[in-house]
Image (cartoon, rainbow, N blue to C red; front, side, top):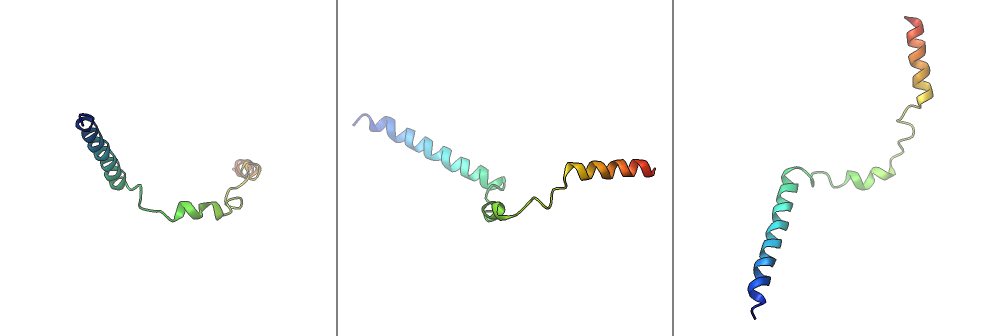
Length: 66
């Protein structure tokens, strides 16, 4: 029975910390966009990123034109 005098306050403190963490995360926008991370893996990003070689050639051509 004396264990309850220790465990109930500990449980209440842990529950309070969990609720506080949730409220802080919600205020900072952690849960604003729940759909995009799930479908982000489907997108093909290879075409969007220019290769290093082509950007270097473009930079050299621009410097040569000046």
